[in-house]
Image (cartoon, rainbow, N blue to C red; front, side, top):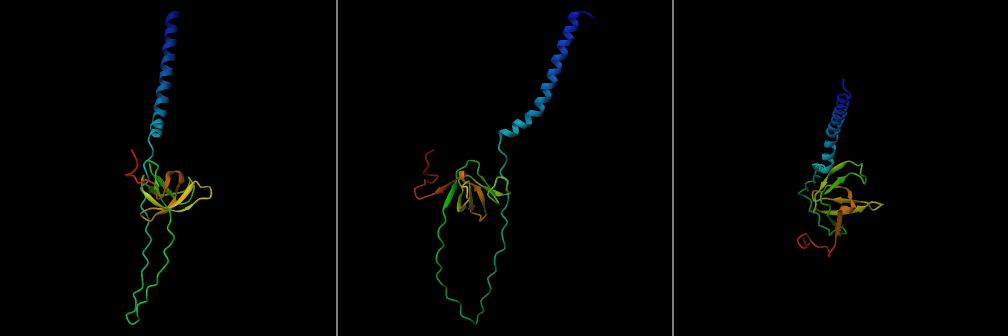
Length: 153
């Protein structure tokens, strides 16, 4: 066979080999890249409600007890979720903790406590679901904080 034909066959083989390797690599990498472009869907976890305590029926023969004024508990600070994707509500202050649900963007929550390192807040949602969220995603509401309608766009 002529040396020119052998060189052309060799070049064609190299080209086809590299093309095959590139196609396989693209087929493996493409799903990984597209999964990194979009954030995962928010978990849809329903709050588990605890059974309501049953109040005893008062005996009709005894007079009803007089209501005693109870001191109002100290008001707890509130915060608004400012992280655009919302936040995951977790059972303890750790990224590896179980997710209890989610808190939507712009939702108002009651701040119950702050972790020792200040990275986490224990909050209560409107649905009375309690858990830990990352503190950077919650802005504490003060008298001076603008409401969403007052915030310039």
